Image 1: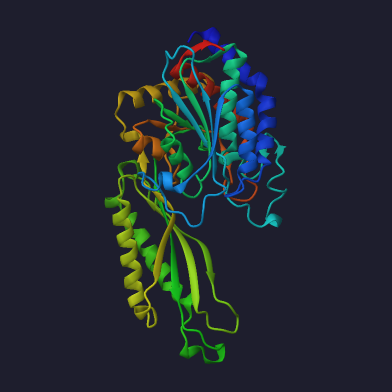
Image 2: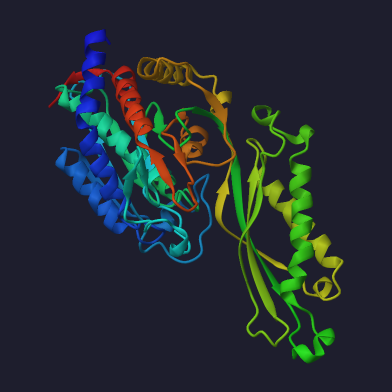
Length: 431
């Protein structure tokens, strides 16, 4: 790509950025928590169709994906789980194909009175856009889309097929991205603009979600000593899980990308329910747990250790030793993924193209980092032989109150993405 073309593309992003910001605001206003993504997906489908893409909008069927590698078990049905993919078909096909992936689902907003302003009424203040999902990761969807718009504004388009994916379920299973693979979408590389501050993710952790169901022995609180409190029984089990967490983080068990990270794997008790009445010893409780895994750590072996830890802790409890806790797996069954271990020529070429684009926009070397979260990159890297580059804008308080994304960073990521597409896919006259 010559300097003149590069300058035209960067200027086109600048010229369109006010429109991109308005787009991001409108998209963020859709409260697309799990099961409520349809309005946001309708919006995305309309935008893709207006740009002349072939739009594929479908409801995910668990039966289609449940036997595929990477599937995560679910509780309930998928009646409201809808994916949207817009396909750009090249006229010449002379370049390398690309998946631009992003997730439309956002995590619950929590107590509204703990937000400074309503989470689904996005606002801009001092260069930041606030709102649930503005950073994680609707800004990434916007940067993917407007990178393509910038090329079109220059009278150009990718000289290879590009599949723009807006998927659900990233925040709990990843089954939305898996459904895209089942649908047949494949490419030479994938770009996922998750909000990791303009760094390239070299490795990501795996995640297991599970529930622990405990029984107690109810009685009137006046005779509490003759019963068994299911809620209090959870406390030593949680402590035992945290001891396991400490062992899994030991230096000798760390993946190479996390060798100098003292505590990469985090266990989180994210939800707790139990009991029926303040004056009754609780007969039941359920707590939900998220546990991280290193790349290469086997999920089934990890589950065996989790179960063994809980059984051992239960044996030390007078009631639970004869009433074994029930463990229910649902949600994430996600393996870790390390782009750093992909030694293929395509991976090297894709990383090199992103490095060059980032350098051209920021005049800095591309930072690389192993993250302590998971993304949908694993589906492409582990199950589709596709190098998956995770590179997106700077955001703060994702999953928290007053989530926000840095708009200057969104602009730079859009420019970098546009240059990356131009390099990776090549360019041809817009059709």
